[in-house]
Image 1 (cartoon, one colour):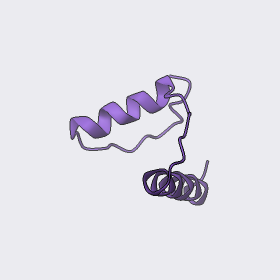
Image 2: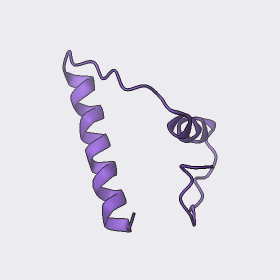
Image 3: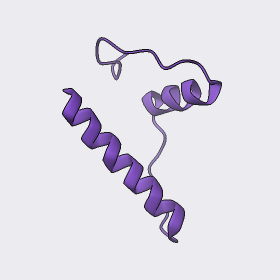
Amino acid sequence: MNVDQHLKVAQWHMEQARLHATTQHGCGCPVNEHYQKIIDEVESGAKIEEELACSIDK
């Protein structure tokens, strides 16, 4: 994905999170291995480093 596409996906995720927090809507999306790595990195407080290649298949 290019930068613009990443920003659009991030925007979609942020809006979904906002909607989930303000309504009775339940997501039901399972946390996959890729997203769990991202969650763990953010929760650790570590500096988020730029990825130079797609990490989904890693």
